[in-house]
Length: 481
Image 1: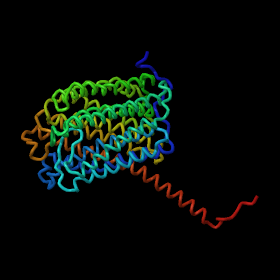
Image 2: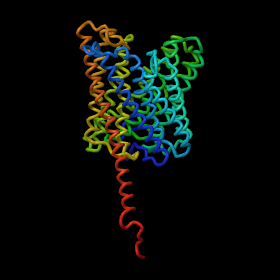
Image 3: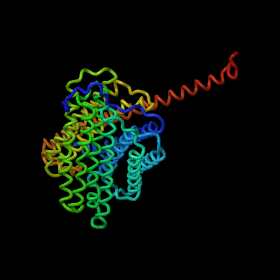
Image 4: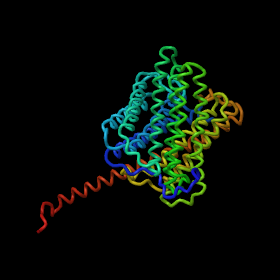
């Protein structure tokens, strides 16, 4: 049977990297964690500004909109690009390392500029979808650097791709998934370019950026989803929940999840970028094209249900995988309940984004020692996905509940117009869940920083020991014979 078959002997993993791929993966991981840390600081302001009984006491309520812009760009754009950099670096050989470092340097520069943009003068925030912006030259320079680095990252992922290997093995299946994700990302960049040329001077302000990022932003969701599915298969395999499909079937399912992105071509050919048809077509593409991820998601869910209790070392990986599947499924279901522009919309995309993020966090725990860092603290790494995922679940359920009562998105403080108890209770639950999630996100940053710092301390200790040995009383003597 092709679909649910034992998959005996199939292990989904990519061999430990060496040389330039390993160093690049290290750099991308640390960049992503740094972006998450800074975005977490901004998210504290966002959650407090939306929480009833708290926002009235905040002196910086007007900072909500620029903080939201920076938070979204760091927690979604930079973090997802950076972890894509980790995965695509693992799928490359050592050639074209200079191109890889150029991509990393541009993205790191762009991240630093975006993170500090609110301090660079008037911000003029525009809360358009996918890539909200601060209308200032400083921010746009950072965004241009980030986008250029992303383009170079994708170019290297194709030019320096490692040998594919057999699709009948788990490694080959994962490599096919990573290349399918890179292809959808390249289509998304082409869509951004097409929109930029097509719009010209026909729009301005928030509407301009809404049209500019609408098509490519939708397409990047397929990239994130396929990368998440790769992480799910990898995490399931290494956490004792072996996917019950053959690698060849898994490879086809990765391709199937990416294939709807090809629908962008007829959309751009048939609909003007500024038309309602263009917007509706991409909305439907994501709504129904996203269902292509369901088959492999179902495979992973079956694997989790059939799996035995994980070993101690597997517990953080299993926790992250379980939380990721639950959050992504919740976000997907909420997507079909959206009516209008209320806070059900952020409930939907927070669920999906957090599902992807948890998959990346779980694979980070697996990769730390394989990238030359110390293994993560096991108990903290096991608790962190449940704290982060549980807080985010409360957060999105509070948003979804309040959205049912008409609370509008992209608002804070008095602008939310919370008049009735159900609305207040829903947003209070949102605030509580958000604060718990912030703690969970901070724990992830702490685990990774502890791992990196422990590694550095161990290296310094070895160097001091070597120096002491060379300068000791026997230094310079020679062994007889």
